[in-house]
Each structure stands twice: as C-alpha cells, then as structure tokens.
Image (cartoon, rainbow, N blue to C red; front, top):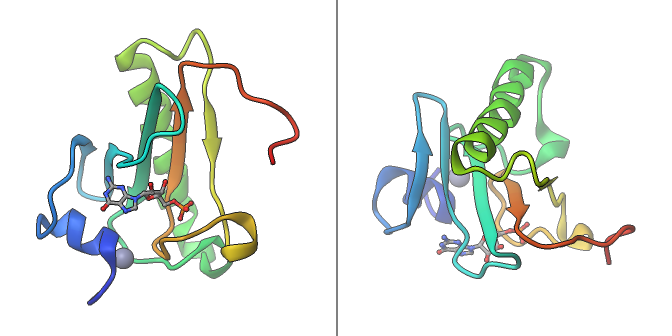
Length: 114
Ligand code: 5GP
Ligand code: ZN
C-alpha cells in the first residue's frame, strides 16, 4: 500500500535487517529493540491492524505464528522463552498500521505488561 512504511520495507525501498522471507511472510529486526532479541514478523499483505483481519486471513496469520516459532528455534531462543505481541490501535501502543507481531526474547518480561 502506498505510503505504508512496512510495505516499503517489504518492497526493498527502505533498508532493513531481514531475518526471514517467504511468499507471504517477512521478518526483520526492530530498529529500536526493547529486548536483546526484537524481531517484527508481518504478512506481506497490507492489513492495517488485527481488527481488520478477515476469516480468509486465518491461514496467513497462522503462518505468521509458525514463522515466529521457527525463527525462535533456528536462532536458539525457543527453549529459553519468548513473547509474541500484536499491538492493535494507538491505545494499545500501535504506531505502524500494517499488522505485525513483535517477537521478543533474551530477558525476563513482566506480567501484566504496561
Ligand atoms: P508498533 O508500535 O506499531 O507496535 O510497532 C512498530 C515497531 O516498528 C516499533 O517497535 C518501531 O521501533 C519499529 N519501527 C518503526 N520504524 C521502523 C523502521 O524504519 N525500521 C525498523 N526496522 N523498525 C521500525
Ligand atoms: Zn503496509
């Protein structure tokens, strides 16, 4: 989608530190990491936020979770634990409106989150 930061990163118009890519999924390191491991996992399809997910996106969203889990295994932090977060709308902390999962690891996380 024109003007979307993450669509531009996926297209290669803006550089990123890529972690994983397939036909439907893209993952790269967050520019402002909030944990020793902080990777963003997103669909190539432009969906603004989770509230706009459709039933037809179920497989795609499942694939995102699978990609995150695979990245965790391949990078060796699956066993020590990780957190997967999807901020939805400004009130929940969303600042880029192309749906994405934060895959975070390498430190202890608090519950409930702030
Ligand atoms: P949100 O706040 O929408 O849940 O998450 C957006 C994330 O994108 C933030 O953690 C922010 O640091 C990251 N981010 C914003 N702009 C860029 C960028 O240009 N490159 C990368 N790699 N990450 C970005
Ligand atoms: Zn987009």
